[in-house]
Image (tube, rainbow, N blue to C red):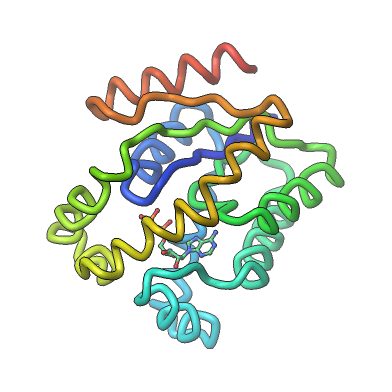
Length: 191
Ligand code: ADP
């Protein structure tokens, strides 16, 4: 099994690279952002709750996202491996993910961190918002808040994975294909 966490700030290109990695290595893609947007679209109570929080650029509660991930792991327990995109984003989520996977004997193989200068991110996301139509990509205050949330709550997880010897950093600046090649090379070394 190959279980990869694709790590990086908002706007680092995790979603794009995750889609390419899934196709190359035959993995299942778990994006908590996509899952939450699906709940919003379906108009579920969880979606209604999440929408208000996401519009402010702050993180949805650990309880909600851990619950979603737990049920998805359960449903896909016999797959070739997973790629986690946008999860975990807090220490509590990282600990819960390790518990979920270790108890099934399918631990995280590696965390691949896309290294992108946070100063560039706000510009990139606002540009993406024009094409994607995503509400939280179009409001400058929301975007800034998301980057702040990343710096304060998510970036510290790099140490958590470094202590486990699982952190691999990849340059996130360059063309889509260059970054994809760097990620693939890391995976081929690790597995
Ligand atoms: P990006 O990586 O560009 O921020 P995502 O689609 O991953 O985009 O996330 C969009 C929003 O969804 C986040 O700002 C947050 O409110 C919510 N969200 C997604 N994943 C998580 C998570 N693991 N924990 C808490 N909130 C999350």
